[in-house]
Amino acid sequence: MNPNFILSKYLTKSFLVTFLGVLLMVLGVVFMFEIIELLRRFSGRDAAFSFILKMGLTKMPRTIEMIFPFVVMIAGMITFWKFSKSNEFVVIRVAGVSIWGFLAPIVFITFIVGAINVAAVNPLSSWMYEVYETLDYRYKTKNPEAMLFDSKGLWFREAAEEGKVVILQAKSIKQEEKTLFLKNITIIEMDKNSIPILRIEAFAGDLYDGYFELKDVKIFKAGEPTEVLNSMEYKTSINIDRIRENFVEPEAISFWDLPLTIKFYEASGFSARKHYLRYMTLLVSPFLLCSMILVSAVFSLRPNTRRGGVMLMVAGGISTGFLVYFMSQVIYAFGLNGYIPVLLSVCSPFLVITLISVSVLLHLEDG
Image 1 (cartoon, helix red, strand yellow):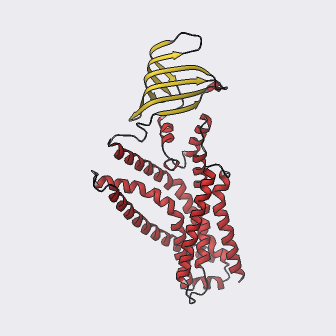
Image 2 (cartoon, helix red, strand yellow):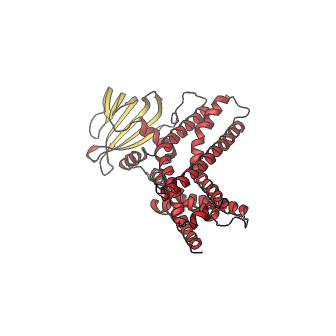
Image 3 (tube, one colour):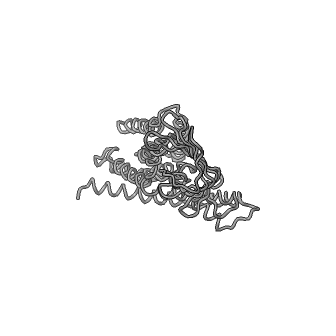
């Protein structure tokens, strides 16, 4: 069997075992603090412990997603420190394996973990975060059946066929199962020059798949008498999922649903910058995790551990992690507000970290 394959398998297994251990430990700590915070928040109020437990469980994946790069970095630091303490790193280097050959399997498996997190874990996390937001809204409204957007009304802009633009307003909406009920509806059709050509008012309406069923309808056209109808069907591309996504944060939308959401918003004339930034952040997150592995290697890989400095290593790694997180959030805010391009705001943090880490590791390799 190829010695390089055996070494890669050993390094990968060691990192994965450490990563899973750190992840489980962090999950337990995060869940404990979430429950404590929710108990403090609901103290003195009528809230069942099962409800608090459900809110804690549904919020936890979102919190873990935020600190996931730290979990990877800590797992990398522990793994590399073990190799250094047991002198396995020295033996591997003496055997003729460069530091890049040593790091390559761990960086590769980290990228795979990041890809799995985006492709499989993120959809579950998004769904659970949406459930958490809905539970929180139900508690605030004291309505166990309330949806997140019940009493907010609705404004929607839709790009229709033949260059028409449709503006929809409903003063109140309510969802029951897969049907959306609207009241006090106003629909305005405009041409490509934003000149109104038709106005429809309805007392109530139901949204089904591909059309509105309007009731007590009045149709206004310039130069024509008002047309009154008991009911009418009005075609639309709006659906309940699109309306829901208009009221929830991008974090509550799955990675796989974000491209269609962005396309829909852009076609309807809405700004999709927030959703596009979220999508790009998820897309490059595996690369960010790889850069965190390089950071952990800078602070943990050393041929001689007898010199001490373990606390300095830990403090340096954690401080660097927090600095990276703070700078990435600042750059993210710049991108969200349009001061810098989206691609630059999501790529610059891990690119800078990677270049600095590679430079330091090259210096250590030469030394």
